[in-house]
Amino acid sequence: MQRRTSILTAFSCALALAVFGPALGAAADPDGQHGVDEGHLLGTGEYGKIQLVDVVDVTDTPDLIADVTVSPDGNTAFLANWGEPDCAGPETGGRTSPDAGAYVIDISNVDNPANFVEGELIGFIPSHQDTRPGEGMQVVEITTARFSGDVLVMNNEQCGPQGKGGVSLWDVSDPSKPRRLSANFGDRDPGDRDANEIHSAFAWDAGDKAYVVVTDNEEFPDVDIFDITNPHR
Picture 1 (cartoon, rainbow, N blue to C red):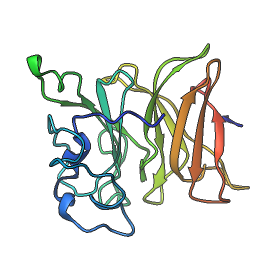
Picture 2 (picture 1 turned 180 degrees about the vertical axis):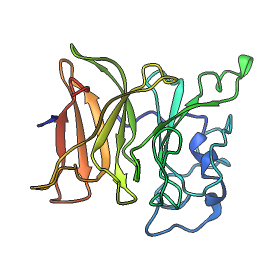
Picture 3 (picture 1 turned 90 degrees about the horizontal axis):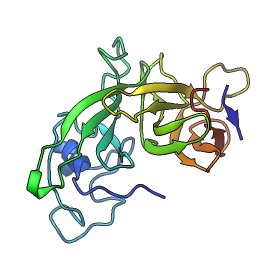
Picture 4 (picture 1 turned 60 degrees about the vertical axis):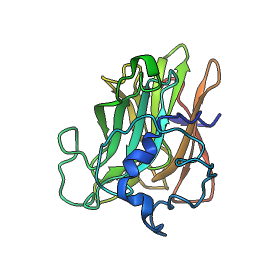
């Protein structure tokens, strides 16, 4: 049972722009993600203040990618798959037919002009059935007495009757072989068994301890802080 109790450096390969595909020219959906011009600081170049060095196509679905985070060593990108329009349908979920989750992309050599290697999709981390990650994804290095390695933090929002909320933690020290540490934990309403939907999450290493702070979509306008010193719990 979990006990309740900076912004990532932007990477220059612009994978986020690549996966939005046709959505770049579309108007913003008030119930979805904001458009390409709204809420951004734009530069003078074709892609703003960043340089496009590679494109990795992972989907043809507009607005499917909700967030992007990069491992502390800069070698791996994780893209939040918000879920296809039929996310609430009768998909089986899991690794073979996930409703949503995170694409894992090797970007270790895309910024090396002398030895350029294209980014490569190397894996997919599935969310629980009828569950999808949004803007709360992050990779943080945690070094405590109970765990040492890179942890992928994923928020969980529901898209169907089997959906679950809370936060999920994955060990991505070896990004090609992610291991689930804990899943769908968080604050609960009185009498509920499942955690509330989480809109955003941020984790940090505080030395001997590690924590994650989250905001949920229910209950009171508050934030919750959880001790993840031992992320297996």
